[in-house]
Image (tube, rainbow, N blue to C red; front, side):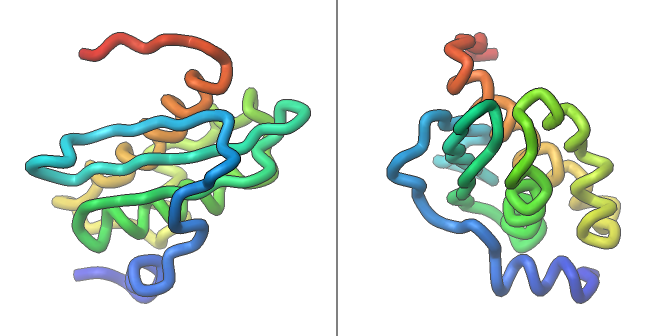
Amino acid sequence: MYNETIIDHFLNPRHVGELRDANGIGAIGDPSCGDFIIVYIRVEDETIRDISFLCKGCPAAIACGSATCELAIGKNIYDLVEITEESVSEYLGGLPGEKVHCSNLGVGALMCAVADYLGIRLSDE
């Protein structure tokens, strides 16, 4: 079901844990009943200097959080729009059809973290 890249990011997630000096935090999902991810970013000079995540979810969700962080580190915050569900899935070598939705968790939480850093309040929809 999962390819070697997904399994590697699940078993050895990159950038996992709470980032104590984060200046942007974003969360997506429902921690009480399903996949949930928090992304922490530390931005300096409009660049992601450090990033981490915490995730409660399936192997694909954890791998997607790891991949999202790998794709974001070192990027200018205005270039993060290039990180999409498709680019996360591609980075991981393709997600199984029933797990493609997991790629939007990391991307969504990252965008919420950037909004938090910029002082933009997102609606609770």
